[in-house]
Image (cartoon, rainbow, N blue to C red; front, side, top):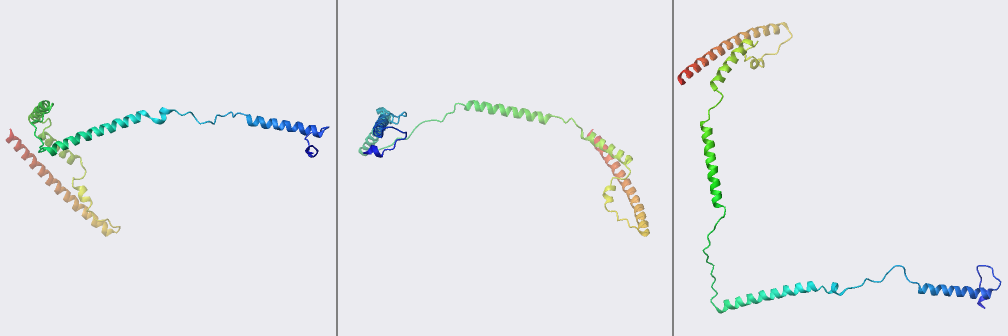
Length: 213
């Protein structure tokens, strides 16, 4: 009676036959789906015994434990020997400190000391190439040339800062003129004094040069 309620997708002559055919096709499809194999391998990888057990690590651990036990046994034997005897410790030694490069270092120090003495001797016996007396004479000549060429005396720059301000009135102008005259007289006096001082220095220098000769 199920074929009577069945509605096929395509038009057909007999609903019963079409129902049987569609049912067989569906069952074949279900069986194929159940028996289908996956295209991707999802099985776990193969395990190897030597990677899980790690025999080398176990061997190293056993060797370490055996070494520790051997050292402990040696320490126990030493302690028992000390307990049975007086347990004296001989820490005396006749070792003398030696250095492989001591002789070479001493020779190097001697060489450096000789070189330093040689340099000191050269510096002490070295004569200067420049003469201080010649410099002094040149400086005196330069002073004379500066006095002859210069428009104002050498102390003019120092005295210029002490000049009074010039006023705009006539009385101020007259006072400034008087002050300028006085300053000229003072500059002439200072120039004469400087010449006298230079002559004195020249005479003293000549006397000292004669005494040294």
